[in-house]
Image (cartoon, helix red, strand yellow):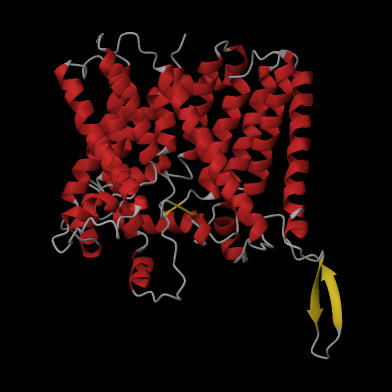
Amino acid sequence: MVKNKFINFFILFLFIGLWASIGSDPYNFLFIFETNNNIELTTSNINYKSIINFFRAAFPFFCLLSSLLILIKYNLIKNQKKLIYILLIIQIIQIITTFFSRGSVISNYENSIDHLGRYHWAISSTASIFIFMIASKLENFKIKTLFYISIFFLSLMVLWFSAVNIIDFYQLNSVTSIYNMNVLRDSAFFLDHQMPRVTGLSRSIIFLYIIIFYLTQNLEKFSIFFKYTLLSIMGALIFLFQSKFAMITFVIVNIFLIFNFKKKSKGMLVVLYLIITQIALFYLISNSRIIFNNQDSKKIIVSEQGDIKKEENSIKHFRQFTNTEKNNLIDHVIFTGRTVIWKNSFDYISKRVILGYGSMSDRILLNIEKIKFNKTLNENDNFKMINPISNAYLYSLISGGIFSLIIFMYFWINLRKILFNITKFNIIKNNEMKLGTLFLFIIFLRCFVENSIMLFGVDFLLLLNSIYLVENK
């Protein structure tokens, strides 16, 4: 064990910095390497957002180097958890395959700065792993502290971005659901970067919902009202944002909440009360747009003959689906276009099975036509969204090749006993173990429809926290 108070505080600083760097764009830092870039720091052109983004983007590199020096100096790389080694190998593979992707088809769509930027997420993930490796070997350091820091930032993100969405929901005269609001509206940017979409935000709310329930188990009776009020608000946001995966996960989580009660009948009543309250609150928020937007409860239609009539309110409470013809109903409504992306990915995977194309390559290869379109945009044209591969297993293939996929699968094989603990969830006594087990189970399910676990971000940091929580006796 390492006895060094400075390192104890320094690790906290690094971890907080990594959370603050989530959502940063590596170009905010790498632009200094452009040969044709002239930097003039004058009081007239300094932009505080640019300065903040510069440090946010540069911080993971600083974190990687400083944590690596600590690991080497104190010889802390040995005797770490097997799961941590597996995650570290996956990140190293991502860095190597990104390096060897130069000269592949992806080089036609990126310059040197773009290529350097693709290392950003693997470097950030590696730095996160190093922090946990160091923290686990520090004397008088409780690794749970990193989890409480994560809770703070998770709460901050949910509070801020949910508030922005709801305010826009009221102020922009929206007649659709929050899910179908324009994600590229001016207010949907934070520090000049696009804020999380409601799908990612809903995932964070699910995690926070679980945290609120299990970490407030021993509250005094007068605090129970506050606890269930928070749960009602969190659940209402899930119904409001209407992410399909979040809704499915929400049902699963509520089932486990029932099992948490000694008397299952009481658990069912509590969960039923919560769901009724959450749905009622969802409808209250959705319907109140009519008042805040001064909208008529009916829409006016003028016929060609000049007749005026009113039809039912055009406001939609639920997300809309388009292109629901029989041949693409399953893909569009259930998988939200994912099966087409998955199918297209094999055109590239089959040509580079061993090495893959490196970190974030799916954003380029599977969106080539959109990238070409975006480069020809005029100011008044509509920006086309760049879609990820949305499957962690396929991402490991397209980015790191067959070896990355095998190691990723090996990671989950090593977690099988913990995942199977979900079947005897009600006999787990430690609430932090319950949190870690349920987090890992949700992340495991999410791997089939998202690839966020393979990149640095909320999912990755919570994964690292969960690995240590499940062994907390």
